[in-house]
Length: 214
Length: 410
Ligand code: HEM
Ligand code: HEM
Ligand code: SF4
Ligand code: SF4
Image (tube, rainbow over all chains, first blue to last red):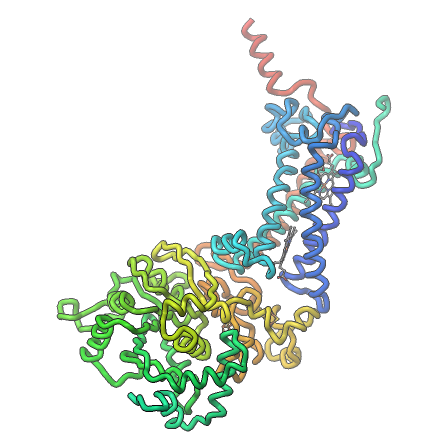
């Protein structure tokens, strides 16, 4: 974190694109979702639903692609190095993050001064990013369970029975949206709190290299 | 019982002054409900009229408001539905039978011994208070005294099929709703718990729509040749599984697919306005009269699987949404808990005894998080971390401690 370089090797172009697609879809899904939950102005329901139904497929395909790509694309394993290895290693536990979980929590609670040593993603960060995967699929599951054309499929009707019917499923889907909103709030906050170098990289694919590094 | 050449129904119709035309028209709508072509109407009419004998049936009332009976036994003017239902020979029907006392109770026992009947059950099965509800025969010490649940078990055991009419009979209905003091449950759950295997056909809504009961009776008598086994075979059913909170049974409720297979929202006449985004915001407004969609005033049509928009109510005059009121979801499972407050889009989430809307929870948590992040940001600034970030540690705290320990050992 500390004024460290932001090399393109950390986020190759393909992952800049997947992040963009994900972000745009999420904004569309949350906006249309709020509207479907309670139409707060007139004349938009058809569009809102269409928007939701398009974005939901895109977001699922995008995420699935991102996961598969992790096994093929190489990314940097460390913040201050251009050296790359398979991206999936950044998602599995790494030696650099060992014993650092509670130290990271302490850091964010202002219980220690110095930043903690970490791999490309710190331990908290990694857990949060990893959590978006099952969350997105869960949101897709609850979404298809309230989607007319699919709700009768045994895979989804079983879930409907479990939660006590489509009304409860809609409420779960709605609350799921809030989990994404909370994630995004914290995520965007932490990504930008020190400086905008991380955002420049993930959105504009622009490197920030402190003096003396290259 | 009239059993002449014309058959029983012909006479009933004549006596009640229903013209052949009315009857044919009605059979046409029954055909539509059964998913048959309306050109089948004359066949249905002929078969109904020619059928030589009535089918024995028992109608039992459980924990109910008797609304389903009211809905069906529209006695002020002859209605075709009522007359077709007369085709069932009710040997027990609390609300409208002439028999009373032990004589009436014997009708149940006798019929249950002989078999060959269908049982129609209205109302919830009240299992609370040790079953001392709907009790007949004075005190428990009297000979022949029975609990309501015992009567149901006796009548159901030998029946060819049970038709659970109205949401209460299906899963306990509104009586099943929180806090369910009477421990009300549905017929299917109760029979499953008792190990009684008689098939149950479930017909929710509160009350049950008489036209649907007629459709099923026609299906049983005509399409299935009065054979309940064949009836179950030839009638497409949807199965809605739920776990009953009272008996703990996981129950697969069979419901006729032609009636309970699609949502109200799928067939609603206001649906065009839904897609256009034209909504009623206030009941009694101009928008309501213009046929705008009732989604914002709590319509539960999107989650409710019934054919109300197609069959309609009150002798096919109108129905909830058409008349300007949001569907309150009376045809769903656990329908009050799942749909109240009726004028809100989603049901309340119950925390203890109070209900909270999901939107309130979301907004509150979101606001707390936003405030937390602002505070945290102020802290980050105060800690001088903004800009280049904090000074980095040279070594992990864990390693430092270990080194220090090693150093201490030496
Ligand atoms: C990923 C796959 C997703 C699928 C398959 C899906 C599907 C659906 C469907 C079918 C509906 C009901 C639309 C209607 O009946 O008109 C819906 C509603 C909704 N969706 Fe999604 N969705 C997905 C993702 C998301 C995400 C990521 C969010 C939020 C960030 C979201 C938020 C909402 C909200 C708030 C509603 C309204 C719920 C209500 O109150 O009724 N959805 N979704
Ligand atoms: C305001 C919106 C957002 C901003 C400013 C933002 C910013 C960023 C930044 C700067 C990174 C790089 C982090 C680093 O290298 O330290 C990143 C990565 C990531 N973000 Fe976001 N993000 C946003 C929205 C979202 C949303 C809505 C999601 C998912 C629901 C999301 C999921 C992720 C994930 C999973 C990564 C890891 C990227 C990868 O390796 O593929 N982000 N984001
Ligand atoms: S009135 Fe109800 S059922 Fe009809 S379109 Fe609107 S939400 Fe759907
Ligand atoms: S429209 Fe809804 S509330 Fe009205 S009878 Fe049908 S299911 Fe019940």
